[in-house]
Length: 212
Ligand code: AP5
Ligand code: MG
Image (tube, rainbow, N blue to C red):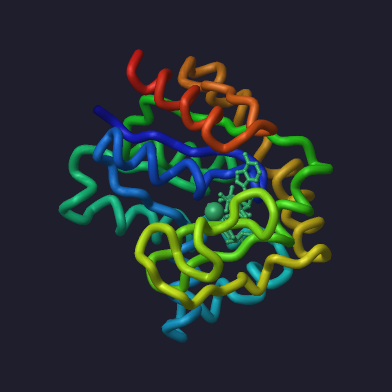
């Protein structure tokens, strides 16, 4: 099996759906956003370089991201493919990926813009395991206790505010959305309506994975 790409606008539910897909396929999740945030937290040179772009909701330059993913795909656990979350996001990134990895499926989670702001502004996640929640749409089962790891500390992302979300959406429409056609032409694009309950979307995705 090759790799799977999770594709969609900010707040589409890529991270939310990634857990079930990873469990079903055994593919490790590779989230470029998470990798950049980890680099930022460590104060590394990469993090410093990415900071200004992330804070303003712009894409980090292609050569930085392509280098980062290229290195990650060399690691031992990536030998049988990975679940890419948030990469590629430009045609140049997709072309670079094509040179080093087979992509079997691109899952495009489609959500209208008017839903995105409310999703992003209500998001919080577990500080220990990273599980993603929402103030209204996806609460923890027990108040302030993580369903996955029972942790009790939660964090909100610095870029989860209305101003930055609008820039991220603009970057998505200009630079990333054209990739859907690019992958459609290569017959690997699966579009799923992401404006539905989380479980329904997950069931559709898992059904498609079974038919691969
Ligand atoms: P990244 O971290 O990838 O952010 P993003 O693409 O903006 O996507 P999000 O993580 O915000 O959304 P998601 O689709 O994962 O949604 P989630 O499941 O959390 O990138 C951050 C930044 O890093 C970029 O802006 C850029 O600067 C840089 N970057 C990263 N990759 C790059 C690349 N390849 N090239 C260049 N730069 C790059 O869900 C969102 C919320 O909605 C949650 O609260 C969740 O509980 C809720 N929710 C989920 N599904 C549903 C549903 N069906 N119904 C209701 N609520 C739902
Ligand atoms: Mg995400």
